[in-house]
Amino acid sequence: METFHRDVENFKHSWPEVRYLDLIFPDLNAIPRGKRIAIEDAAKLGQGVYMPISNNSLNLQGAVVESAGLGQHSGERDHLCFPIAGTLRPSANPEVGQVMLTMLAEDGQSPCQFQARNRLGELVERLKARNKFPVIALELEFYLVDPSRDERGALQPPINPAHHQREAFCDIHRIDNLDDYAEFLRDLNEAAQQQGLNTSGAVAEAAPGQFEINFHHQGDVLAACDQVIYAKRLIKKVAHQHGFEATFMAKPYSHEAGSGMHLHTSVLDSEGNNRFSKANGEASAEFYASLNALLAMMPESMALLCPNINAYRRFSAEHLAPTHANWGENHRGVALRIPNSNSTNRRIEHRIAGADVNPYLLVTVVLAGLLHAEEYGAQHCPEPLSTAAAALPLRMSDALALLAKGDAFYPTLGPEFLALFLACKQSELAEFEHTVTSLEVDWMLHSA
Image (tube, rainbow, N blue to C red):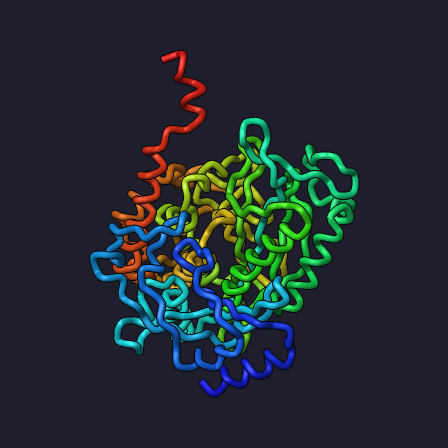
């Protein structure tokens, strides 16, 4: 851990005002968990820090899901965690730095099988062994909302800081709308640069108060996911500083577009050639085989890509959220879009996941398709915009059932992780379904 000791000293020299360090451990829902220590104690992290393995089985409220088997029954054992190289950086709080942790298994040597980041890391190594080097770029949508709720307790769009009126109209990609939020976006972009986040700017999206932040393509897919964790944390903090709340709910408003996390991916060989293209510039057999694998695995992937019941409210042809496992060129209504590009940049845009997805699981789902492309082959790849495309499960219960009885992701995520994921998500769904909603009361109080 000599390298980390040097990183700490360099960090303290570059950011002398930092007094504390947040140790970040993304849980199953990609919510940052961990602890805050004094910056003077950072050097001790080279020896590791203990955290309970049950942190991998927390629900959205931060409670341990006992049915997952990592809680009280097993004694909530501590596991050794170490800082991840290259993740030490400042935060939106000038007095607080942050670093990402990885957890080891009980043997203190191998990666913990219940941490999503570790499962993705193992998949990346398997791809490299096959001379496949994925390159990805992520697009993250989010809403700014008013911190106060309306008279029924629902979310409402923010007050435009330039015109002092509540946002109410869809105004896609309007540049002037970015000017209205210039101070928020300036502070966000400056802080993102300070943190070394690989972002390329923001655009106004399809609904009042909705924005999208884009990340550049990069070959370090684990770092790309780490940056999403940091970016969400940053966006929420900067939004609060400007009098807003930021939400990554997949569907915060019933009648507006949802928020997604789209993933662009290509795969290179060891010499940097795009394996999706032949030497003459045409699409390769591997390109079509990868499409075929991703489409075949897509129904089973829905539970992983849409981990919360709110995520399924997003799917609607009206809002270009696909409902079938289909693909097409330069078409935003499909699940797998092939953007306009030359042969060097030929890529696949995966458009299923909501903004609430765990980025490590999103990337794992897509890279699993690249890993198993040869098994599916290119000869049976469906036609673009096929009307025979398989329907996707659009209810959380159906998606979880399909994942539970399927086997598409056992080779990459493993049975232990899948059992953990299913237990946690089935528990959350059961709690939601046992809750009496205000809509039920409105409908049934006097009519039943």
